[in-house]
Amino acid sequence: MRDPKRIRPFLDKLAEGWEKYPDLRFGQLVMDIVPDSDRLWNCEEAEFLKRLDNFVSRIEEEHDGNLLLVPRNDSDNDL
Image 1 (cartoon, rainbow, N blue to C red):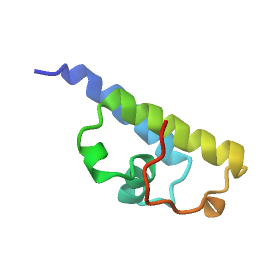
Image 2: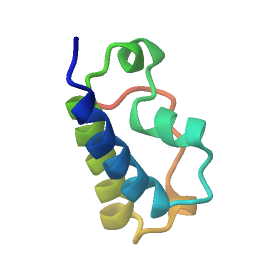
Image 3: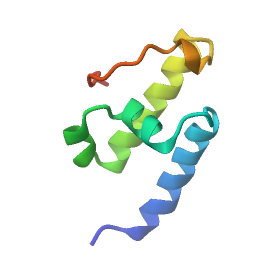
């Protein structure tokens, strides 16, 4: 069995990232972080959080934090 103590830190980090962009619906956020549903299905928590960090960094660095300027991309980007 996986360690259930991993869940709360994961959710806290997810909440921290999501709270920066509260206009996103949960599904939008998840699909922006891991756009490929097959990859999402098999995504470990550590990889998901790395992708979350990359998502937030990209918006902050490339788009001055303005989510409206982020082009929609349905393909999966490499980390």
